[in-house]
Length: 346
Image (tube, rainbow, N blue to C red; front, side, top):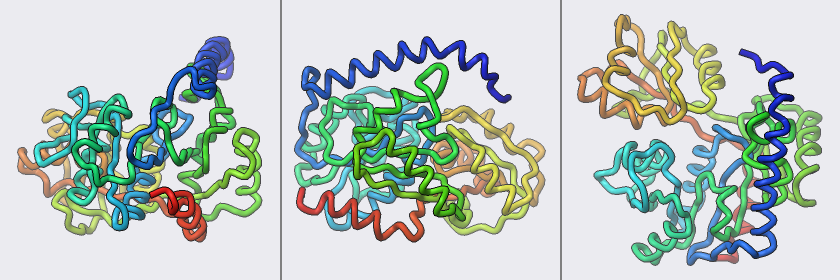
């Protein structure tokens, strides 16, 4: 349902109050009254100003692939949606329930070469990683743009092309976690989820809007979402025609749009972001499912659904679509920038 303008306007005074509170907090950190602690590792933060998915997971995975072969790397997340608290380093006993769905996805992909851990307090998590793995030189912080208690070397801000921060307001009139000028802390901005054929004039317009809020000279990069070939829950390539979509992510619309352009979508089932699937959810997904139809999910959903569908013996009816970030013809420029920022810091 489309949001009515008068409702947004009614919430604006509350947004001003919320924005003022975040301004005070940022001011205290900027002036050193609240302390940002330096940790032993070099720190790259990937985050956003908006609530919800802006493509942080694919960017963290991109950076992991870029650096982990040359530098001992760890990924530290809060572990949103997990059923545990405190510091946990992922190991063979880890599940989406114990460390969160996105960290579990990182662990499944990059273990044992990359350390994956979760901790609400990023400083505590970084120090614990150093205690356990003093050889770790690089720490990738997932969704930590507002977590200012830890000092960072590079701040990468993501801006969803479909929901630009420069057109939005702080909560509750909008979906910003802080005011737009929080972008001034960014060392680079990546505009994610762009259309494949984004014209030069449109890019220039977006860059101009972004640079109203960033420091002078901060680079802006553009990236699309690349949907890879579908895979079964066992990890093998699979041919799809008829699909039933299931997704528990912040913004399922791009995923749904992609599926409708590639396959015959017979049904769509949307769950809340970070949804903890249950056996009854699986039963509902496979209920009345025709023999020529697969339940197709995101990779984030797969890591949570897989144990359930395996235990029910229906894993063969499920598939997922891996996604990655694609910088297109800007990839060389981005790699050159990020490596130049880190090259003399290790």
